[in-house]
Image 1: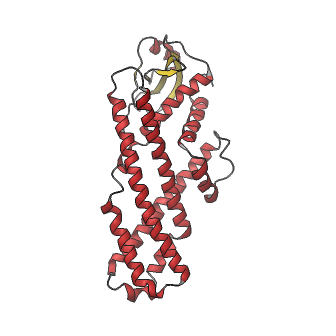
Image 2 (image 1 turned 90 degrees about the vertical axis):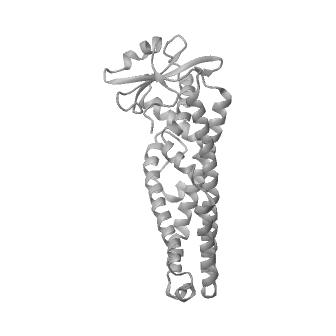
Image 3 (image 1 turned 120 degrees about the vertical axis):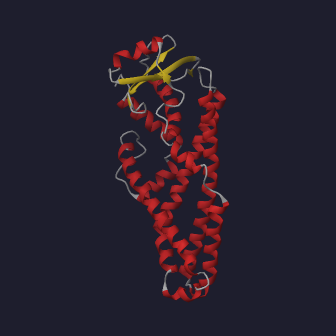
Length: 302
């Protein structure tokens, strides 16, 4: 991960002077390109760790003359731009990896194998077990679909970021930022959908399907498939492990988010979290929460 925030550069001139009272000798400082708000231009100016320039300390917004802006609404609007960029900055390893997922050779063989297993054991399955197998087949297809869509959205996010990095001008082109925000928003939405699919599968089917395939009554019907069936059971174990990681991260995130959003309240539960993933955790909400936290924790006027 780059230790320089996207499109930011070291402070100079009036901006270095403006941030100086808030900058300790062992800190560094940088500033954004110009951000247009209601026909006027501003910059976000920050102090950071000297070594780790992503470790945020203090933040201000300055006008074109280097005067610090105390207006909270203008500051909030400018901080939003930083949070838009921050989505990629702090998730770039995952986004880069996800851009390579969703390929046919990664998913279709597993789907075909599971369908083959189902065909083999079909004669000994009860109605409830048939429903379980149908659910898992649909799950595998959804994972494939979402992985492919996330990969395309990730590629578009990366493409926009590369264009932003190459900018020679001193402001953010509206069309390029619109493209980036649209791609980041879609990427965020699809990953929330992917998380829902994993969690619901773990809660409703995952281990039950694994145990069903490994049951003695299915053994004689799977002799032709042999150890290949373990690719399915191993995939279920991997998915459950990934889901547990998502849930642990969600619990930690929940503790933070209840402080900054009235839409997220009470103790963490799986049921409530699934609701929040569907109806609350949008990209807009992600930005809103991060802006609220930054205003409280890092803005020099709080």
